[in-house]
Image (cartoon, rainbow, N blue to C red):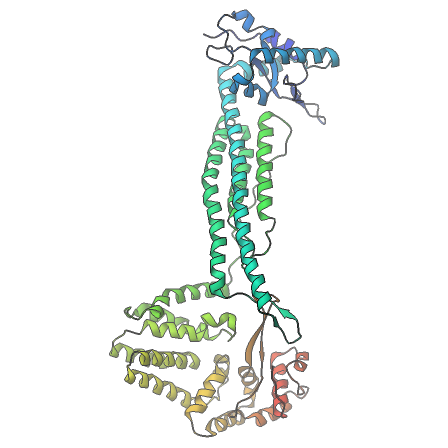
Length: 569
C-alpha cells in the first residue's frame, strides 16, 4: 500500500514556515545560500513522520491518505538527518518527530525566517523527496556515503594502532644504538666523539622487527582499503556528481597505505610527517565527500598529482644496480662447492670486470669491486673440468685491462688451490707472472686504465722480479716519456673516504699518498715534479689541501715524502 505524495502547495507551505533542519541540535539551513552570487542550493528533504509506504519507518496502518500527505505528518530535515531518522526508526519514534516539528514551527514564529519557493524549487524538493527513482538513488547514496565514512574511520583507527607498534620497534633499535655508543666510546683525530653502529648481527633482529611491523600494518590496512574503495564506487554509481570527491578519497587511501609501510631512515630516525599527513588528508577528503553529499559548501577536490615516475636513473646507478644483481646471482657458487660450472654466468661476470676495475678502492665499494667480482667468477668456474679450466686461464690472459686479467688469474689459482688442483694453480700463477713481467709501463693508457690497481700490480711485479729491476723499468718509462708523470702520480694515490658524523654514509672520496715503496723511483719523480709543477711545494696531507687539483695535491705529498718526511695518519 502507498499513499499519494504531498501536493506542491503543501511543500511550499512547509518551506514557508521553517528555516533550518527540524532536528533540534542541527543548525543547517534548508537551503545553502551563496553570499557572493545569491544562488541557493537545496540542502533538505521532506520527511514523513509516518511512512508513506507500507513497511516503511513508523508506518501507521490506520492513517488515511489525506492525513499521511498533510503538513502535520511532514517534517523538513537536512539531507543527512532525513536519512538518519529512516535508517534508525526505533531511535526516532513519531512522538519525538512531532515534538521536533512543533519546535520548528515555534522557531519560525519567533524569528520570522523561512524560504519562499518558486515553482521550480517546489518541483525539485518534491522530486527528491517523493519520486521513487530519485528517492532510491538518494537513499543508496546516503547509505554508501555513511558506510564510506565508517570504513575510513576504521582504517585510520587500525592504522594508528599499528603505527604504535612500528614506533616501538624503531625505539628498540635506537636503544640498541645508544647502548652500543655508551659502551664503545670512539673519537676522531680532533677528539670529537664518533657514533658507533652496532654490528650487523646485532642490528638484524631489530631491523627485521621494524620491517615486519610496517609490513603487517600494510597487510592489515589493505582489506580495509578494499572496503573503502568498494563503497566509493557505490557512491559514484548512486550520485555521479560526487565522483571527484570519491576519487580524492581513493587517492588518499592509497597514500595512507604507502605511508603505513615506511619509516624514515635505516637505522631509524624519529618519525616524520608522512604518516600523520596521510591520515589528516584522508580525513579531510572524507569530510569533504560527506559535505558535498549533504549539499554543504565544501572544498573542491585537488587536482591529482602527476604520476611520479621517480628519480631518473643515471647510467652509473643502473650499472651499480645491474652489477649487484649479477653478483647476487653468482652468490650461491661461493656458499657451496657442489654447483656445476655455469659458462653463461661466468661469461657475464667476465664482461663486467673492466667496469669493476674502475671503482675506487674504498670500503663502501669493496663489496662490488674487482676483487669480489673476479672471486665470484672463479667460484662459478670451480667445477669446470680440467680442459675447460685451462681454457678459462688462457682466456683470462686476454682480459683487459691488465688489472682485470691478473686479479682474475689470481682468483682462478686460489680456487684451484682450494680444490687441490695444483697444476691448474701453477698455470694461473705462471700466466699472471708472465703478464706482469712483460709490461714495460711506458704507455700512458696502462697507467690510466689500471689507475686503481697500479700500486698493487707493481708490488706483485716487484715480488716476481729480481732486485731493482722494476725501479729501472719505471725509470726507463719516465726517461722515454716524461709526460707520464700526471698519470703515474694519480695511480700512486691511495684511496680513502670520509663519513658523516654517524659513520653511516660516505660524504667524500679522496686520494692521498702516505708512503712510497722501495721500488718506486721517488727521487726521479720528485725532480720531474719540480720541473713540471714549479709552483707546487712539499706539504703533508693537510697542507697540500691548498691545491684544488688532485695531481698537484698528490705531487705535493710526494715531495714531502722525498724530503724524508713521513705521512702517518
